[in-house]
Every structure is written in C-alpha cells, then in structure tokens.
Length: 158
Image (cartoon, rainbow, N blue to C red; front, side, top):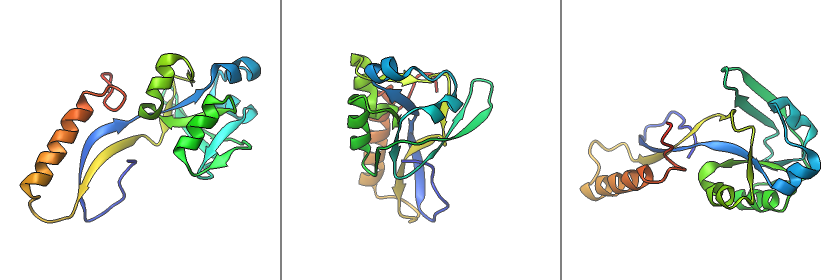
C-alpha cells in the first residue's frame, strides 16, 4: 500500500487506494466546513504518524501543501477513524477504510474536489525470481479480480 520505492522485488499494481479527508457531521456543524485546503490550518486535524503537512491537488491541477495541527496524534489508522467518528476533527483516510461510514452518514467527505497526495496504489509484491510459482500467480490474479469488484479500491472513474 503506497508508492513503491525502488526495489529488486517484482510488483504488480492490483488496485488503487484513493485517500480522502473526512469529518463527522457534528464536527463540521460546530467548526464549519473548509472551503479550500488552506482552511485546514484553522481546523483540528487528526494526525497519523506525525505527518503534519498535508498535500492536495485541486481540480485545476494546483498543488497545495498545508501545515496542519491537532491535539490528536497516533500511529494507528483505526484510532484516527474512531477519533473522526467521535467528532474530534478532520482525518485523512483511505476511501476503502471509511466507505461504510460515508454511506451511513457518520462521516462526510471534506474538500471532495481535491485529490489527497501522494496518490497510493495497492501492490502485490514478490521476490525477484524469474517466474512466480503457479499458486502465487493464481492468488495474485484472484485478489486482483476481487479488488476490481470493490468500487472503493478500484473506482469506476479511474
């Protein structure tokens, strides 16, 4: 998950991991909804792994790098989701992690016209041997096929 670094391993992209920004409706009702990425500076952002600079690309292609702040900082993705659901602030999440919460209205996408950077892919990674064992190839093909069925991992617009 992410963007591969140079490696001797063989990689096959099997899905997309679109990241978005989300918040609970009650947080947005209390604090307002950001209209532009720079507005994030005035919001309580839920920090994961001490990443305090969030980047987005707007519909016009312009990139915004925003220094964010917040009292909540963790290295656990699930904790960020729970904090967002509790109305503690705005979170950056993989769409597939929060698709159910978006569907039931417990989270709302923030700045939906902006793409969270860097964009991530989902990769199957294997050793650099010349030919993968048939069972490994069959498993990768199976998972790639399943991922194509999941819109949150393989959006139809992609």
